[in-house]
Length: 316
DNA sequence: GACACGTGGAT
DNA sequence: TATCCAAGTGT
Image (cartoon, rainbow, N blue to C red; front, side, top):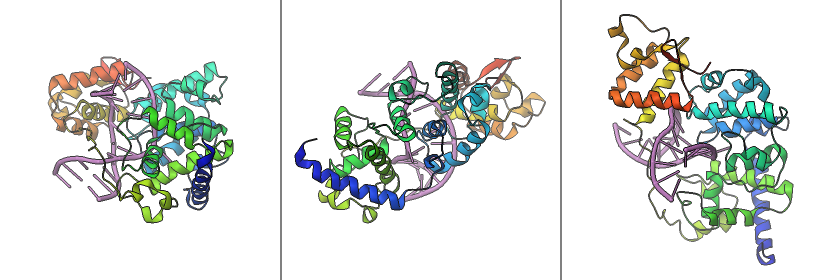
């Protein structure tokens, strides 16, 4: 940081810090007594998933598995089952693997630094930096989709950040990070909160923004995005089929025979045990046999399901 | 670097 | 109804 714009930056830091004081949501993983494990679990659950859907599942997990060793002592299938409908169930699998690694390689304690956190399954550059910062007060360059959008508008004058994180964005984030440890943690948290609550992707609430006076995007007259985001396909995809299969496995008390996935229960001559609704939903997709096979094989390969007594079940 | 990977609320 | 998009990671 050059001395020339240090003063400018200070105003930015100060304005956002005060806004955060007055407007931050009371989230349980922000409580002072929340453990590093609780923060790690929250960060993984929050990947690509809104806060409101994470809250009840996070509370259930914290009550069920208060420490990494508690989770590590159970089958990975339990983690997947109690992941519920959060989505991307491989995250549950990796969180379980992380718990095992923490128990076996870190004496049961969540690592307190970026490098070791990055070595845990399911923990990438964002999550490693976030846990180091929010659980251990480290000065880290935290860059998530909220912070990227805030930087894009406030500093770069663009409606949206690039489709993928660029080196230039990382350099900018590093340049904006306060030198002071404590201030850096608050800067990360407040920029993220601003992006989530005010500087949103659609319909940003600029009238409520504490730093609108310094916003390059507003000053430029709110130019539209330079590209159109490509939406994620869903209907008819393998992902949809995998999701429907997982819904069946989560509800099943025991292994589900492969035939049950391939044809309607009525044609089998017996009723499924408690999996009627999700099984009916799967069959309603009416997916091609090869697509169903691809989905089942994929789930087995990913470790989200295993074969037992000729049927599929969550890993036990 | 492009893609695959779940889910459901909001617009 | 169709599309967007939410505290990303791994291959």
